[in-house]
Length: 227
Ligand SMILES: *[C@@H]1O[C@H](CO)[C@@H](O)[C@H](O)[C@H]1NC(C)=O
Ligand SMILES: *[C@@H]1O[C@H](CO)[C@@H](O)[C@H](O)[C@H]1NC(C)=O
Ligand SMILES: [Ca+2]
Image 1 (cartoon, rainbow, N blue to C red):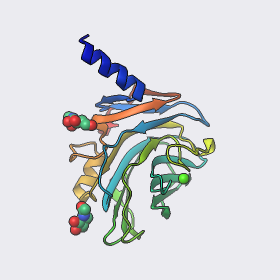
Image 2 (image 1 turned 90 degrees about the horizontal axis):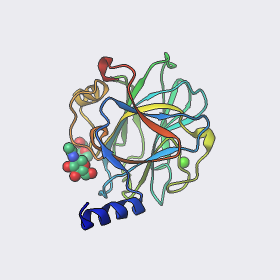
Image 3 (image 1 turned 60 degrees about the vertical axis):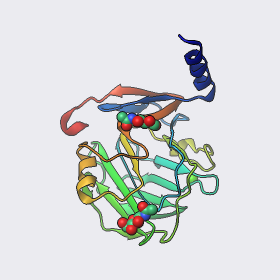
């Protein structure tokens, strides 16, 4: 290895920089319940967000509260949070406030969710398995702070920490995306169907992440409909 490359790889190791890869047809398996494990997603420095959409797919038999996506800033730990307090209910937080979306209890299958938010109108969208739920109002005029700690598997009560192990995720997660726009309905459906998607701040097809603790990357068990 050339000295410069060797030095860079040592530096990357010291900084804890993780893998950067296309996770197409792969999943994170969070093996323990409860768990202290998590995955840190590297988000390139950005401007405050006035619009965004977060999407992901989860597969779990947890009935206790659990976090699906936790984006914290130093000023606000629940800056963006997708949280499932119990079966049949999702909470979508922006800037520490939340709206609740009641959904059918899981049929023991993968669930795909997209949550979108627009500062200008304060309209929050929630899509489950490619279908929109009635929109709600949340944090009109707010701006989501940049320089975030973005974690899968744990719910942050402090920047990059403050975990409650009984809010941890256990099961499988895939297809995590974050865009700085509210996706059009066609693209919300495309995300559900794992079709081609626009460039994103976080993309499952090019994810820069590091695993902390007991999480493994495995192939999906089923290929139908892309999950
Ligand atoms: C946010 O979305 C609104 C409505 O589509 C648009 O007018 C505005 O320019 C967007 N702002 C940014 C910063 O993208
Ligand atoms: C993947 O992301 C990196 C930055 O995180 C970027 O430089 C690269 O162009 C991206 N690759 C693709 C195929 O989008
Ligand atoms: Ca929190």
